[in-house]
Amino acid sequence: MADGPDLARPLHAIWDTIEHHASALDGLCRQLAHVSFEVVEKERALLARIPVWDGQDILRILLRQDTARFILDRDGTLMAIEPKEPQLETAVLLVLVELARQRHGANQQGPTGSRPLKAV
Image 1 (spheres, rainbow, N blue to C red):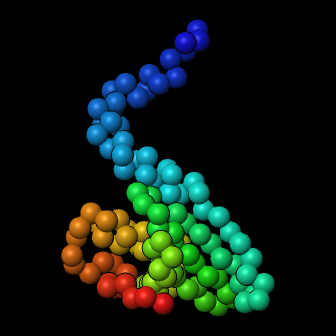
Image 2 (cartoon, rainbow, N blue to C red):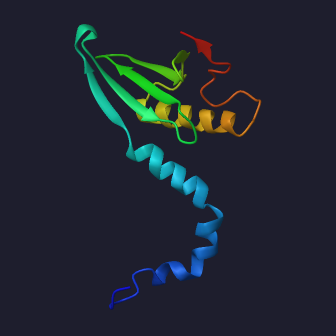
């Protein structure tokens, strides 16, 4: 331990809250920190990959000039996701919300309207 100010002092009062939500917070940090991009030359597109926390799934988003195609890679099985939301950032977040909902066993249709997922 180093001498100096206690940089965590503001967290002391809410430490129980942090610990209660630690697993979810850890997952969000891991998921959003590992976005990668790849150029797909033959399709003149950009491929974004977002690892889905708590598993081996990867959300792929194939971006072209005027379109975004969402694909979930579940251990090599590709499933199309068709979010109804046209705004890219919002659509990505809604898809991640729906995947989290599925992971936790909810059976109702999610906000993207893409359930059930279908194989590509």
